[in-house]
Length: 112
Length: 111
Image 1 (cartoon, chains in turn orange, cyan):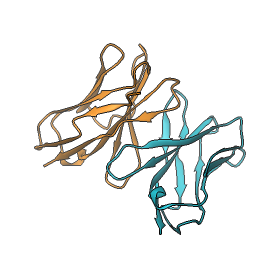
Image 2 (image 1 turned 60 degrees about the vertical axis):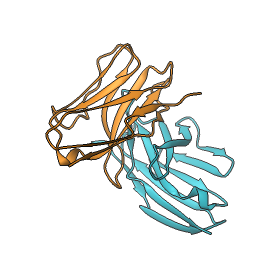
Image 3 (image 1 turned 180 degrees about the vertical axis):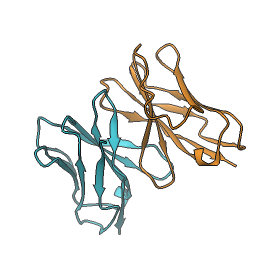
Image 4 (image 1 turned 45 degrees about the vertical axis):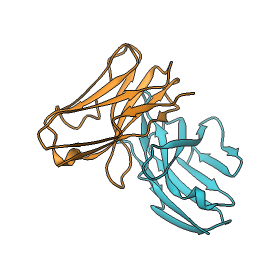
């Protein structure tokens, strides 16, 4: 079946611009996660959606980062006024049981 | 705070040899421990996981062991092949449904 998909696969933007990254989870998965992976580094948790509960935003690095999940399915991660340090791979994962997470291919963001 | 330490950071083995990657975790409430394989330019792929009610799990050439008392868990790959070359991440569950990841091990299998 279809896995987690993310778009765009690559994004180049200029410092100060806003970007939106999209995640389509596996159908029926109620939990959705966003992570950031800097070059050669591990995965840094950003935000977690579970069903209709309020999202866990404890990993968002600043108020320039926000995310929403519409209709319990697709999610969008928005970074406002991008900075060069935001350059990274942004990974989305979804889960049926809030434990076993399946990842998408990621969006590679480069801020010039 | 909670953390997961992973060792070694790089590992080079000869094809056919075994590879072992070790992780320790700090949160005694962790009860789920997955391992992911990440190839260049791709997202992490779940390869095996273990829950705290078992001490070992095996799937073909891959096995994971868990010692809850010591808060250690390990990935064992036997009969390594060049296609096993990748970065491997361990993770441990936290309260509330999140995972905390190790820093990764870059495995290189030389033919």
